Image 1 (spheres, one colour):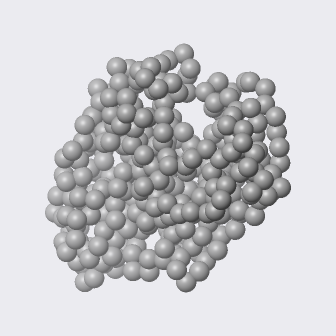
Image 2 (image 1 turned 30 degrees about the vertical axis):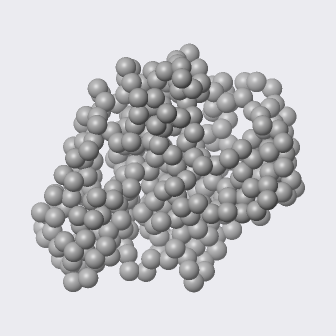
Length: 333
């Protein structure tokens, strides 16, 4: 690990000014991802600016929804009674993230900014366009079982690892960002970028900007659920995951919001599936047809074609769970 200096932030303004002026400085809160990257030599900041003392750890419920501070610990959000009641998809996603120890340390802002779990990205021995643009992607000809089947490019096929981001995607969450001058808000679907020809750019966050909160609108008529499929039951990243939010009336889907994780460089909103499900009855035939719509544009790599069938089954299962709950346990068995 390269030497670095450490400073404890006394205000948002001072912290942002420090990082904006020193391009090699970076913020740290939980540090659960950052320190690993530093140990691997992938990230080498000259200074760490600790933001844990800033007033960014509140969970505020308002008439319009919820505002979650960026320094909130994942465990505090996951087990907050009102989050579990009104936003179960968030609670479920967080409870399946990392391990209890890491959830007690990791923060909401850090989770949304964690870097890809591609082994080639995290090992400086291998060429990687995310670390050094235009040097090549080792994952494309290499072992790519965990990689993307949607949204990839010839420059990068890594997937976004955040469970929380997938849940927030179906809730139309907004990322609140503080810059040098003022706070501004970005819809989560716009916040994350596809690799295209610039895989080194993963989000719209600019140097010196700080995520200060996440705002989620109140959706009283929708029941939500998060399903994560992984190689083992704990402390593992998703092979595929599905976040579902449905509004149902008399066993007819009035609106649907669907997002996938583990299959794309950003949380993948399934817009065509949502459109297909509208005004459809809750039954197995509907869910099976929706699964086919979901994967029709998938482009698997050499070692991850299994994700197509896995995603179909995961979507059917998630829709069935939410659909039966919405129908009061009746559903079409």
